Image (cartoon, rainbow, N blue to C red; front, side):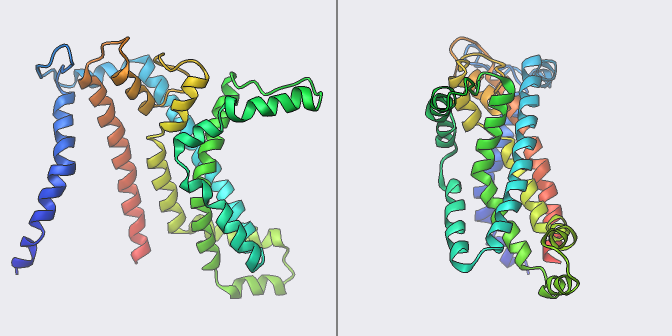
Length: 293
């Protein structure tokens, strides 16, 4: 009976060496005062974690990350529903064209998206049109916090809204046709059918909940788009910049030659981010089990 389990040993060894081992080593490193200046791993307990939790720059990065994560995921969800309704209500030929066009952003690298949505690439031309071309005497000030936070959220939603669109299309097509036909016989309008049948089915779908949790976990590592905006705002070397997410802050601390940060402290930040991601993934696994029932 135990022989089949022996075939799992090579896979478990590879998983440990490739995943669990480095994470465990990183955790031990975060409990030391290791740095390039001081390569000796002198144990300091949880001092690095205590220092992080009392660091205003770290908490600001947390706030920026939460703002961008929940703003972008919420917008992706709303836009995904709208695109799914557009596809399912279109004819066969239009549905094929819409499906092909809307999924294109998923294939574009996030750093490219950050450049495409940057002031130099798009908003300079738009401001020229608004200010001079249309003679409106107004322009979009991309240096304002509301503006660049909104653009970052929009650019991230532009990438991932197609994912919610695809899942939502599958949910809509799984709705029993009898419910739609009964509503039509009763004379229900399109909005009423969406309000009473389609939207409740979308919200109650385990597939939608799992997708929301997965995107939330993935969005916590948001790096490329905020990183590109550091350059547009001229704050690429400043710690605690208004667009510094946790991932961007870790990169700045690790790569900057202007500051001497202990690598162990950066590792502690990565471990905290990993803990958030694993917690979200645990919720995903717990929720996804209902898909198999």
